[in-house]
Length: 336
Image (cartoon, rainbow, N blue to C red; front, side):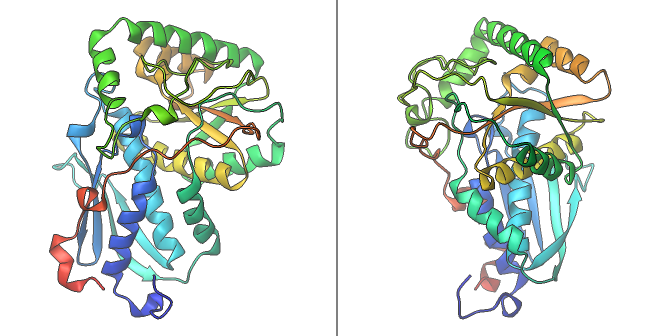
């Protein structure tokens, strides 16, 4: 937003277009960025791009829904930072299952300072798969991260030591199952060899060797170039985002909660890494359900820790140009 033009003097359509653009910072599984925004007079629509769904890894669309949910939360925050509050309609049209959300009814309620800070966090957030330091995560920080997820209607369960070992065993089993599936290996190879396309995981963000972590990180099938030190993540905290439903709208909300938790962690200096492999395999997903005592459905596992201060943060993953993710053709004459 320019300093010369107060938000109240700019058309809502401009705010919607800029929010869709800011949502490009959102994380997504394998950096697939599987979303497409359409800016309309007075509303903003979010659709899933099926061509960027992981057909072998994620046939039900659970992870693509979570990925799009992170983008939805990013857009909501960008609007709040500019002083706009929308009505959010999730899965608004049963006849259009790829239409995940519609933001409409914008009201100018005054810029939200907390949202402004979160927008800054969007631009520095990254994924660091290396071991964290020996410094424990402050209890107060865990509480804030928990509350951020809960405000989005999703629960965060922090695992105790025994549950952490069960998660580690489940993650190892999921990795073995996926390593034996040629379609999954081919899909992973595709998304780790996308240099110059604006999507995927470049070598610079992947560890050059397998990190020593309590819960195994994903084996990407090829070494990266990110240096890994000798540390271990004994001080890391592991948790799960979960809810009482396992449907497309709940996956979307899980993504919103993941975004809220991750940006809050970034603000507090806590490293967060999502662990999706363990929910990709039906058998290990059921193990996680047992950890929840059958009370709900696991959406994604998380590792939380304090990054090793001796390591420079990894680079950001590439992003598609906004012309590839935001359609403004219906309002081009209204944008200013």
